[in-house]
Amino acid sequence: MVMKYDVIIAGASFAGLAVAKQLKGNILLIDKDDVGEGQTSACATPISLIEKCNAQDSIQEIHNVFSVYVGNKLIDLDLEEPFVAFDYRKFCKSMFKDLRVEFKKTIIRSVNCKSVSTDDGDFEADYIVDCRGYKGNSRNSIFGLETEIEYKTQNLQFYLTSSFVKNGYGWAFPCGDRTRFGVAKIGTEGTKDLLEKFLAKFGLVPSKIHGGFIPSQLQIPVRDNIFFVGDSAGQCVPFSLEGIRPAIYFGTICGKLINRMMKKEITYETAVEIYSKHVNAERYLFLILGRVQYYSHKFPKMFYLFSKLFLRKDSFWYRSQYRYLRHFNIENID
Ligand SMILES: Cc1cc2nc3c(=O)[nH]c(=O)nc-3n(C[C@H](O)[C@H](O)[C@H](O)COP(=O)(O)OP(=O)(O)OC[C@H]3O[C@@H](n4cnc5c(N)ncnc54)[C@H](O)[C@@H]3O)c2cc1C
Image (cartoon, rainbow, N blue to C red):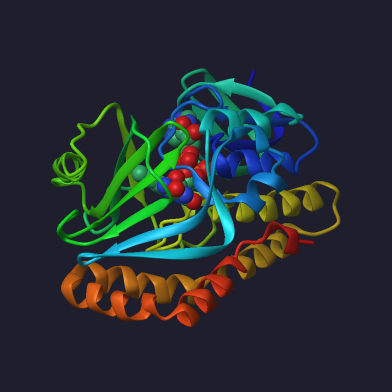
């Protein structure tokens, strides 16, 4: 007999956990790994998000300064709001502990409009949410690889300079006694090599490597009656490569809407319309930063020059980050 649920959430990372947090009922959350395993991310995000998710115990280090290396210059920029480097496992466990859901660890074979097929059999539900991350393999998408090393340094560092990372960008995010070093560029080819060269600049070699595609093209968020959230819907911001806040923001919206459908307060059509409206409201930001990402890869030298000029102007930096951080605020969701 096929087990039937109110909602099935496929994927239990940032997006899936945010959806689940909003739901009451007969909910099934499925992931191929235990909750908190299978980290892909550098796990840096504004401190307010961690507070709103009640996951303060996951904070590893708080950063007030963002250091950008452009050309041969280092520019230190104050952050309007501190960013934190956090522990993925602890964060997910904090999100998971208060959930009223059934969790199943199994590999999902396919997701359909009313059912999910897994290695442990098929499951049915009234609503299906796909939070399985990026499933494509586009040669034109940004691909990032990262490694965590015992190495002490300061500030969130971003490398927009060909002397450190050719045809891409790099980062070093300190998290306590360790630092997450990563690189991102278009396509998978040569990325591991790029990471090795980047680390060699610090006299280091990579440890265990993780990462994946970073999908930054907003997709239609409801297709074939399936709600898509997070990387599965291309909701990672271009250029900044911030995907955690959007996954939690859109996951919260999607979860609230499904809850309202379950209570018969709104119809399916209304839920789709509201969710799509929230996603479409971010299209302009994705378009602008998508262009920046494109030109930074196509004409890196020109891009470094512009960055150098712009980032020197405090007013430009402060205005931009003020505006940018207003996006994806879960407190603004009613
Ligand atoms: C190298 C790198 C560094 C990054 N750094 C940052 C950063 O510092 N800050 C930031 O904001 N963003 C960062 N991002 C982006 C961010 O990690 C993603 O946008 C974010 O993880 C998206 O969350 P998600 O829940 O949609 O998907 P994911 O985190 O990818 O989670 C998908 C979940 O689905 C599960 N799953 C997948 N397929 C199956 C299957 N077939 N069966 C069962 N389960 C399955 C996986 O196990 C996983 O738990 C980074 C990305 C990369 C690649």
